[in-house]
Image (cartoon, rainbow, N blue to C red; front, side, top):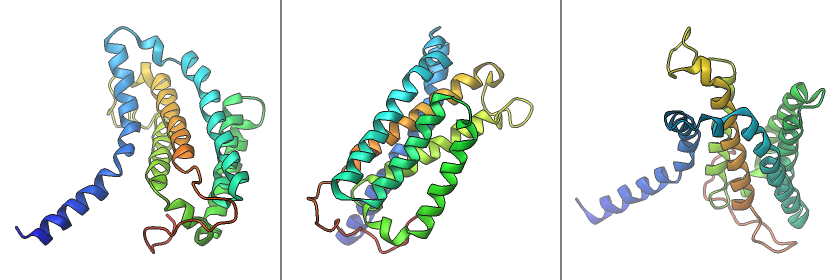
Length: 206
């Protein structure tokens, strides 16, 4: 194997390994089963998860708002609005269950229409890896919430009929934690008035 081939393989492996946060959502499922096996299932239950959810996603939203104000970043403003919607959803007052879908639709439309302006911040550092991983974990939690893995359908998760609430809440909190990590990873390291660093790729925002 030539030196050039080794460099190419190492570079490809490095790009793949950057996506390791995508494993955290499925690991949340494994965490619930591990606690159940140890007789500690209550630590993955609804009460603990709901107690943690608001502080976690609330802090993520605060960091995004601070970032948006610090450098007038549209990307951080978008994520501040999105996480604020998640925060109110966790508050569980009337209208938030449907309202979060309105916020989600607005944010998706915003990202699609302004993708070229958002792309530099999206591609900065490891931001996109954590953000995509968080989105995947949210999607996984919604699949669990809708009982897609129930025994009468795919039968992929053992005891899903008993554990689906713990599974959903835990994976959703994993997603909240990843949004918090993303807010820290995406924290602007540039001074007010400077342009953001160029993105690493010329591809469109995804």
